[in-house]
Image (cartoon, rainbow, N blue to C red; front, side):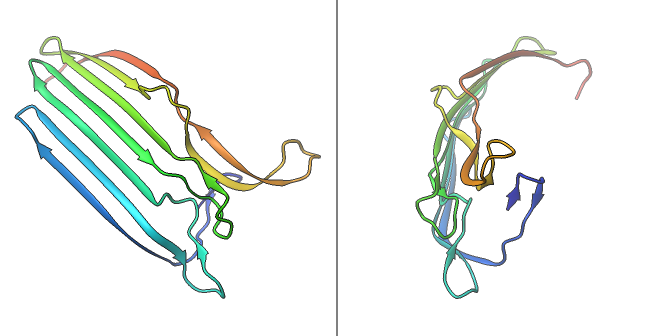
Length: 172
């Protein structure tokens, strides 16, 4: 478990979880492929102690999917989706949860010549507000304010477009 106050990791002990994972990849045509993956955890808890404490800060459902276009008339592209459901941030209190996210990203590349390639990346296509990381810990809003338990989060990127050129000066 990452501790953001001092930048260290804390080990919480052995745990047990039950669930399943599935992955698939299909080559639809010579240029188009579909990929997907999903993990679902039914139950996860720390072993030992006099009562069950649930694993916190770990999503119980994660999914991803992509459609990829490769080497089609000089174009390559990938439309990617990733999703995480809400999850517990406190092993003892099920009401303290992180919000989930679903994000779509698109990447395009066009070979302009043997040594030059155009690149375009469109991240968070839907412009959705979301948080990449979320933690539950005690903190203060000012040095003399009382410490309170609250959710701390790192916001995800808004809709972002990045364009560029790749130059190749030597053979691979």
